[in-house]
Image 1: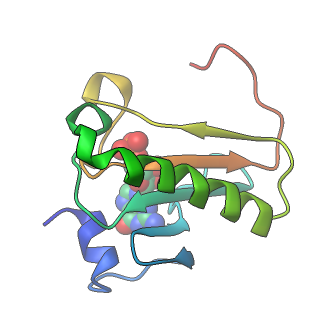
Image 2: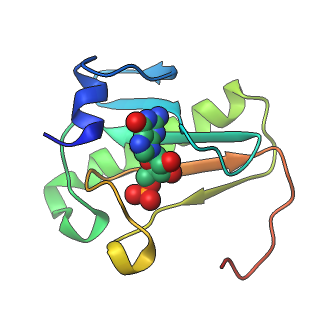
Image 3: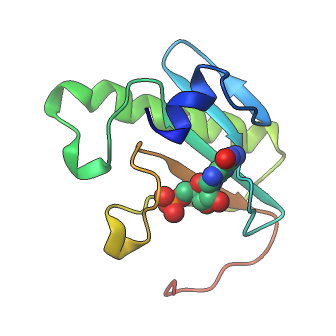
Length: 110
Ligand code: 5GP
């Protein structure tokens, strides 16, 4: 069971800011911006590249949750990031979208 499955199951605590039948959003324990929230599917897809066509609606749902949570947090401008694979910085192998806001962001990212 991954760390995020344990958060879904309430086996380890997290600052949950939004939940519905298919998605969960909680604050990152090591925030990289004043607002740093992780949005995850309850279905355990390990990483974006492992999603299947059947996951299409769920992937859309995740972006809708990001949109909703950003609004809830009062964010107008924000960044949404997915690290896919260890080489891209992924450390937890349960798909998650990073919602970052509350400060300016530069481009390209590091
Ligand atoms: P990744 O590096 O896989 O894209 O992102 C994993 C994120 O999970 C990191 O930003 C990290 O700070 C966060 N994280 C790791 N362990 C925990 C935890 O126990 N609770 C919460 N809320 N976030 C965590």
